[in-house]
Amino acid sequence: MTKKDKLLQQLHYHTFAVLKPSSLHGIGVFAITSIKQGERKIFSDHESEWIEVSKEEVDSLPKHTRDLVENHCLFNKTHYYIPEYGFKIFDLAVYLNHADQPNLISINDGEFFEAVRDIAAGEELLIDYRTIVDSEE
Image (cartoon, rainbow, N blue to C red; front, side, top):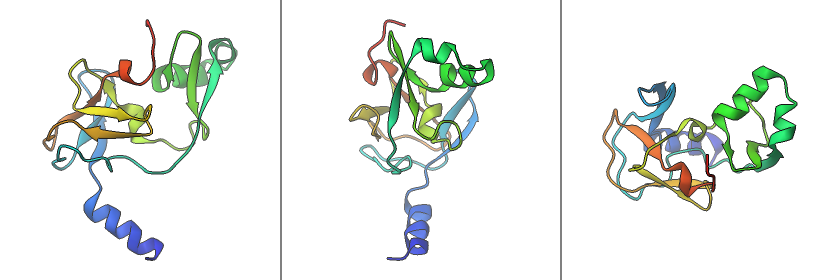
């Protein structure tokens, strides 16, 4: 299968979400078509590493960069987890907002996500942050 064929297949069968303003928190990820329970191909399958960076190291960054890390990266008590590509490319998953009753679950610490129920077009995609990184914050 050519790259073009793969792209067209992905666009036809696995294009599910878009960024939009969220009433929960700034920007969120919203379904643009229905998503069936069990679907796992919601986000990019591009594999990249999340780099563990101490909060002290983040504190030393310029304010505009620190704000990006603090608002868009997972964290625990002592570290942030920043994508290896920094903020040059954005994965829609970075914009998932939190809910105690999410419609997505994290698989393998955020490696990919699965719909836990059918999700209607227009519905915000939500994850329980506590299931990805342990934190008291």
